[in-house]
Structures are given as structure tokens and as C-alpha cells.
Image (cartoon, rainbow, N blue to C red; front, side, top):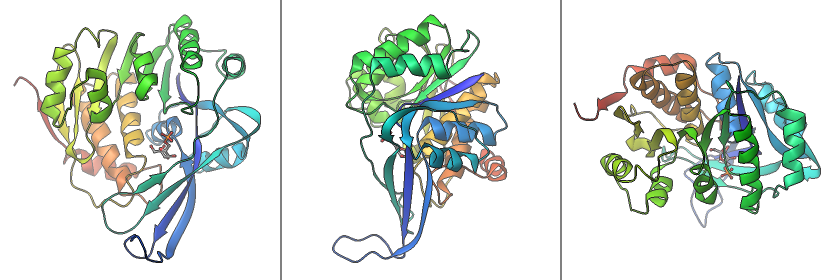
Length: 315
Ligand code: TA6
């Protein structure tokens, strides 16, 4: 089974303005929606759309948990979060317009987690975890969560010998790199931080991967994403560059998470690196064409797959 774990989920308030968002001007609203906020939640939605069974879980506040569950349900995704009394699902704000330049994200902090909550989360939601399961930790916990709490969570996962996938950043990513991990998906800035170098091209990322092999010794697969420029998928045996097709970007929030759902689907279903990268790239692009934070059109993914440009490194 695939479990997605979101330790700080949100409800996204998406606000689309009538005209291009401009400072010092009254920006009238054209449309507004509520949607799922992520990020593991988005991975679950992606997997569901791809027909892959998964469990969408994590920790959130009891207040508005039902609203979040209802939003997930609109994509056919069942969720079962461990909820904390007197806490609320945070609200994030996504501002979009018709500039085609992407969205603005304004996010709340959420609440910090404690060790006892991790224990309860495990006993109430993860008690059936077993060796062949994949756990996708996508999104950081609230930044005020003590790193020892996150490390404690990872210890507990390690005991179950699960396959770990992580899309986290900063000190949480540093903590992940101390463990055996099946896949990480840093963006170029997060990867730059890991290797302590300013990486500006996909080729820089490839070079940094080989230069920092000892630092990355616990990681089986790495996908480094650079937004519209593309991504590199790096393993010991083979590396590929993938460039996305051009799309009219409506809302790029959640594209990275949709991309991760493609990576996870591909790895779990033992697709080749080439197939995995093409699928994930097409999904990320198809998501950017949508108004909301999550979901994509599966037929559109099939069309876009034909337009993904890829290159095997060293050939
Ligand atoms: O990746 C998109 C997204 O999950 C949004 O839906 C939004 O809620 C935000 O990212 C949350 O990011 P954060 O880093 O605050 O967990």
C-alpha cells in the first residue's frame, strides 16, 4: 500500500482576479474556490486519478478536518487524518490571474507537532504499516516543529522498514538524508542547499550529484525539479533530463506535488526511468492548466506525454 503523509495540510483559498494582479490597485475578484492544500494530499489526489490505490493520512486540526475530507472526496480521494483537539486546518491563499505567469502563494504556519501526537498518529493511523509499504512524506511539518519530533517520526517509520519517499525541505530534508530513502524530489534551490553550491542549470545538478555521492549515499532515486525548465532524474545506473511541453499556465500551485504523484506511481509500478520522467512531467504540466490547486485531466496527460522532451545523460 502507498501511504501519503501530510504533517501540515491546509485548505487553499484560491482567488482569481479579473485583471492582472497589480499593487496599488483595487484587484476585483473574478472567481474564488476552496481546494485541497498540501502537499501529500495532492500526491494522493494524483495517485487516485491515475487509478492507484493509496491511503491519504497525516496530522491536522479537528476543526475543518471534515471540510478538507470533503474537498479530497471531490477527487475520489478518501482521507483519514489523525486530528488534534482545539486545532484548526490552516488556511492558505493562492492568488491567480490571467498573466500566465503562475500564482502567488500566501501561507499560514499551522501548529507545531509533539512526540505524543506522533505516537497517537502511529497507533491510530499507521498501525498496519509493513515492510512492502511505501510512505510518501510530502510537505514539511509546521516550521515551529522541533526537529527531534520529526526525527522521532522517521525512527518509527524506519522500525517498520517501509520504502520512504520524501518531498520536504530545509532541516527536515537534512534529517531525511540520514536514513535509507527510496526517492527525494528537491527543487534546484533545495538541492543547492544540500550540496552547498548555487545550481542554476539541470547540468549543474547532474554534476553536483556525482560530486556529492557520499552525501547522497542513502538515496536511491533523486528527481531535481526546476519548474518550467524541467527536471533531472538521477540514479546510480542512469540519469535523464526531462523538459516539459509548453502549456498555458492557469495555476501552477500544486504542479510539483502532481509531478511527485507521477514519480511515485511510476516507481511503485516498476516503470523505466524514461517512462517515469515522461509521465511525471506530463502530469505536472497538465496540472498547471487547471484553475485549482490539485487534480489534472488524465486525457490531457496522455497528449502531453507525447510532447515531453527527454535525453539520457551520457548518450
Ligand atoms: O504545493 C502546493 C501547496 O501544497 C498548496 O496547496 C499550499 O497549500 C502550499 O503548497 C502549502 O505549502 P507549505 O510549504 O506551507 O506546506
